[in-house]
Length: 342
Image 1 (cartoon, rainbow, N blue to C red):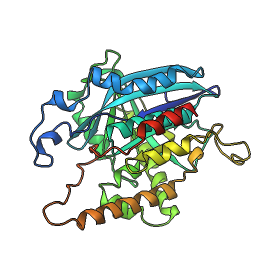
Image 2 (image 1 turned 90 degrees about the horizontal axis):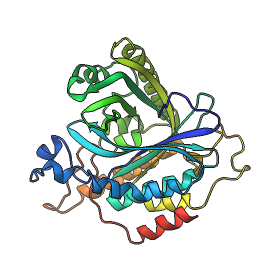
Image 3 (image 1 turned 90 degrees about the vertical axis):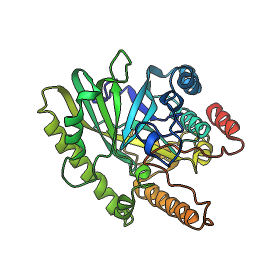
């Protein structure tokens, strides 16, 4: 789907979610001093992927406001890790039940014990939200083999300027669905995920709400300047900055977020002064400053608990953005079912 524009009648959503629960790529060989798993045991392909995403697709099929659904597995690159994710994009009308979609996504993340998951709504140029995040979308003129992208990726990762270095991307596969043949790349700046493992970013965001807003704007400026440079590449059709209204949830709060989404949409009174035509992150009252402060507090509390473990039983830190296997909270299926029915 084209994320460069958004008509008045429809909204575009896309999802960050994976059933993969082991490190992929070189990380499966180098990470945690564990036995190396074969790729077929790491990447969730075939029936494993289709079965995992079916509850989400079932909810979408039941919503008459859904205009188009594009579902194909995508590959996320984060350092030496490779993550096979659900490449789900949804085009929907004004009456679409975005809360039910978000609850379904976070319910599947809970089932998979994924550390973090997100769902984003593309913001048109005339809309804004207090929980917006900048992103980069690059589309090629013709499909390109992933193996030939090294110079382009180096340019993206090493691009100078204020903000924060771009630390990964998700592939946009070509129509044939082959992982090695790409139609483009996508990046979304989600510091609430990165600060789990990036201490430098955590320190930078520890200050006031103004510090958070400045970093987000600096990141958008960095992406905008990068787009100008990428448009000089003869293989690139478009490179553009997008803003997304996002809801990010983690393993520690999936159940709470699902319960809050089940309360239903906001009233017109609650939305007085809103800068979007449709509530999304507003349903949870999210703002960038509050979201990041809460995540920093949780991350540091969790890190403190790890350091207090008796010698010999201290858990290893997660490798990059990799999903971790965690115990599943009781009642998860009931929470998801109630939220989707609400």
